[in-house]
Length: 198
Image 1: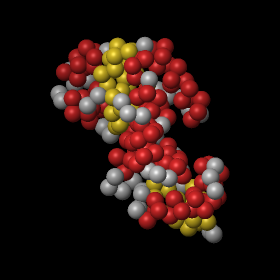
Image 2: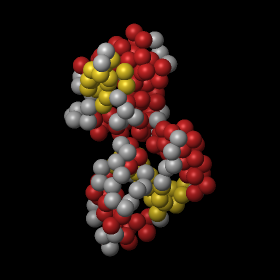
Image 3: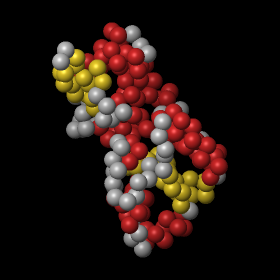
């Protein structure tokens, strides 16, 4: 598999733009003003202002005035919102780590980030951030998850299922599996069409 970070660097020439996208998609509900963005991204103010303005011009970001400050936040209604969300989570953070280390983890049929993880949307009784289906080295996965937990400062709930167990639960229309199949998610490994095929 091609190096995802290198792919992004070729697609988006601006390093500051990549950092900006990463920040906003990992903090989707956190509006930020220019000076705070400069601190977060650790880049020069003019470069950050230019990239935030460009992202606002294409309507990926929206802005609002609060006093004498302009706050930027993600525009969930952008036609490519889900595609950008998927690209960022497949390149950086837990999703990027899983894709990069997939071979070391065993035989993964599917690896899925739920909207609980990507957007902080807690739905139903199944408060799970990550689902991995296949024959997995649980210790290796646990280490990846723990490293991410330290970086983001919160616990990550994950579930591992064997392929046979997943298929059986899918046939029985188990509520957890049906919610997973039908809900918004990012499929890191595996084809979403195969996952949905019931």
